[in-house]
Image (tube, rainbow, N blue to C red; front, top):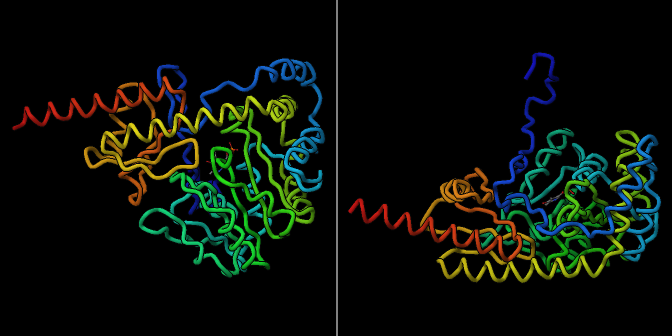
Length: 361
Ligand SMILES: *Cc1c(COP(=O)(O)O)cnc(C)c1O
């Protein structure tokens, strides 16, 4: 930190993204990207837009915003598209939380929430999960604060039901509820239908996971026009051309390729079940996931050692140093072939461990 760096950031600990090694030698199961390419139809439109890079993108991304609105049965004014959904979350915190209205989220959740609260000088409160890593909805009822929930939650993968989300939204009519649906397409119920009935709800989604566009950086936030208007003020005061023209065009095409999207989500769900069963047979505890990852642990090896041993064997998974979850690793669901390699490496690690132990005896 330089001596010039503002003191207001003394308490800020930046978000640490998963590793993105530049060589291709790893099977990457560490950042919840899709193992599938985007639909091929995005390539010509990206090429086409690349010829117009001299010009700024449309600050309202009108075509894309309308396409998202149509897809979810909403109006243009209910949508703002963003440079990844992280950008939307940042604006939502900035707009709807402050000293008088702190933000509340679960103690184990997406690490970025804590970072943006600190960055924006917003007090936050963390609510612990139950022992089985589920969220106790009653703790959020009528809490009178801004609430942010990832559904399914990360890194557990556990989803709340639509009824539970509605219960939280209904009992906090004077506060904003942000539901982060980064993983909703992999098997949870979306809160989007609640938007027709509640004006204190915001839903964020992303093209990074289920739509194979992580590198394009595209997300969106949905809500009542008044809330979206507030968010647009912040967006236009920060980064008016937030979505570049190639990504915006790719987004429109990606939304159109719905069969491709459904099939890729189904493959992930199939490979998730397959991997879960195989891990359970190896003695792992696996949390019930509605996302494109599994959160797993075993008594045979610590989370960190498993992460390191897998990395040594060319498979990257995610380990978190937070002591509450340091026994666990998060494994992104890839193709069946990738999952077979992952599983065989885990078995290898166990065999080597047994060999070491019998040597010691
Ligand atoms: C990946 C992720 C996001 C946002 O990703 P973007 O790439 O910025 O759209 C948001 N919330 C959760 C819980 C995530 O895992």
